[in-house]
Length: 481
Image 1 (cartoon, rainbow, N blue to C red):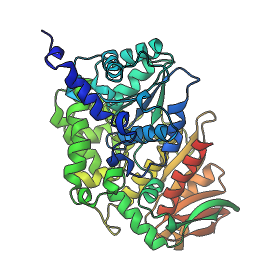
Image 2 (image 1 turned 180 degrees about the vertical axis):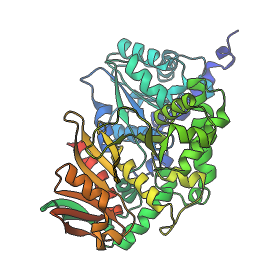
Image 3 (image 1 turned 60 degrees about the horizontal axis):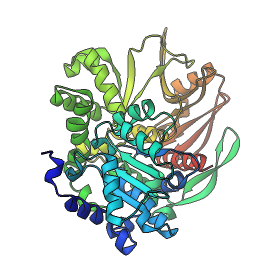
């Protein structure tokens, strides 16, 4: 007797009816309908209704960034657009009741419970697809077998999803990446848009359209809150969770990925070692590492370290930034690199919230700025560090044109007003600009803005919070267009 036959079919059908309340009342559960939509919804939804290309839509992203909510908001929108409720199926694959059932078995039960003959014109949502072994093979078969049906799946065991969907689903899947909240989305979810207005800022002698702050002190207060709690929609909207970040984020995001998802995907034996290693990185987010120092400080062998970094990056927990020299030339041997958390609030979850006068603020602001840029795919972001004779220096963020191998811009990320008053102290940035014939560069501050001229160079100063907001805003506009 198989295990699946131990659960009576009517019990499984009952569960399906419970998961799909709109079959009866034409509405999604109130818990989801009352939540604000992420700004990324307007980018995602067109792929849901795209029928001309026969592909499944794969919604990927770290844990707790709102993937399930986005699926329910898509269902809500389909209902608003008068799609027949009986043509919309939602199945949470992580429920043990579906264990030992194939996707096709589940679909047949959906049809059975609604007395339907076929699935033409249906929208089928599979949530947490990674819980199904060989899910990509199953899904590919469905896409081929049901040409008139749209399949939308979500999953958070990121590495598996990324690799498998590219290998086995070639031409059958469209990937959509949902990252942690940008600062712009955080302001939107907190209903704080009144702090921002559309203005202009001076960059390199040109006035460019830019979102500015009505009250920089108020925006900075939100920015520090974002650094501590801002990566995840649920955390942003719940003070209860904020008061117990450690338990919520650590248990739900960090532990599940480190202790369950990654070990099962990569056969990691020493789970505690991986956990210790991640904690060590999280504490030092934004620092430069070398395999030598990392190995010495963590007591982990170099080859194992390389693997761990790869796994953590695939799971969207960290981002590794490689180094270039003063002319943005790549170094032949990668000996040192910087490691950042993909969102700063992960650090708060593991340690404790920081205030704007803490020593860690500099690295947390750098982590936040980088996490805004991560929403742009195919950007070759690096940092510059060099030592030539007596001169040495570093520039925090450098964009390299990977076709011409030339730097496009450099940004110095500071949480300080000091350099606004003393721009000549930005010696590394000055040297970097001269070496690359740059006429201008951007420097962030706490709350000062304006342009400072120095030896034919124009340094545009912007508050770090304003700069972070605009990266998210511009990225969204680019993606929308």
